[in-house]
Image (cartoon, rainbow, N blue to C red; front, side, top):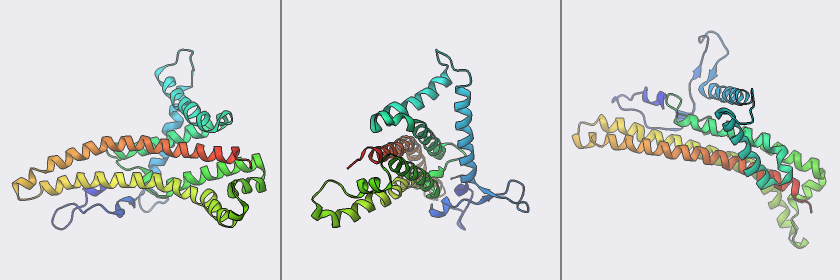
Length: 266
């Protein structure tokens, strides 16, 4: 958004938002003549990883029976992933997946919240590459867990041959294979990407609309600019809710896929 506000059209009005806003210019930390270069998304990913590592290490540096505020926050995040997601969805075997689920939830939540932090104002999850990579990690995890428990052929059978009359198998096997072993990572990634992409575009639309209305020569149109900015503020609060919800949904669906991979046994 900051980049968008600094670019003006020939008529001194901001350019309308487009997908180009998600292809941010490269950052040359040591000048353009000296590679390597990075992007704003790369820096934000590094920042999120460093912040989460520092947070959990500091919170558990000196654990106490009566937890400090930081320890309580860290324990709450892990406890939520363990008790309300891993155990609730996967069952007694879910505890061993709790560290991954807690990390996944924390990382997605923090990077989503970047989208409403001033001077950052964009989430890496609004670029398809990052949700896709997380979806691939989850895809490998739950398929590996299923293969480890059932063996390759038994697991493949469980995912493609549901209890049904055998006469239906020529139709069901391709559908189940596509749904369970091909489509899941795509839907997992696209759901997160689409919500964060749309949220950023909507905030851009109302924020830039305020500047466009303010630049008008018509007094009544100019007077509408505060309402556009008010909507931007309201939608920023809504975007916070979406950020939390999408982090939870991605983590929850990963747990569901793990549960189906290790529990299904035909």
